Image (cartoon, rainbow, N blue to C red; front, side, top):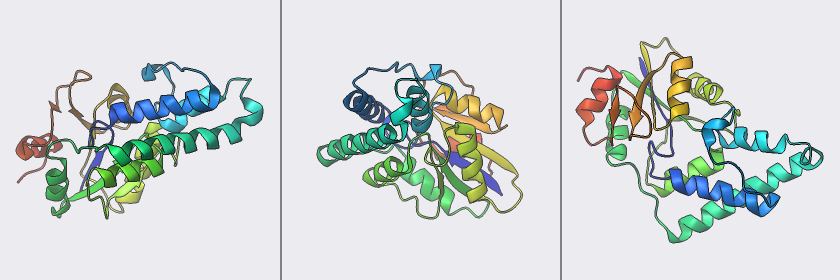
Length: 214
């Protein structure tokens, strides 16, 4: 069995900028500060991981639990309001590619995202992606991306795997894949990688990157 795992923002859905803005706005609304949005500078580039780093500052520690709840609620409110008046689109070909993989008997699917569970599910639904039956792990499960991927794998696979592939769009996706010895496939051009594609319209290329035979 071959495990094929996906990130969400920028990988399955055109939502990277939306998610970032909703997060930054929530931090500003609750804490009254503008944080460094150069995400690669944070130890864990996940919603929970970035928030953990921010709230570890001495001034926030006494009210940490309350602030975390307020920021998450503000983030979800911002995202919900955005989706009420705006559409979020799947990456071109993503719906068809997922459907193609779902019908294969030699593939098991999973999603591992640095976003929270609540935001992940609402965005997937808004983009029209059918992820029923697909294992999902988020930063509601752990602050570290490698651990999120491990959880997603454990939820998806109950048998030995012939290969493990992760589709992502960012440097931290590539790093986590290397740490876990995953075959990494890059969506877009935000980083350099030898296996890269702009979308999923060419299913033959995507399938070949995974190492599957038709």
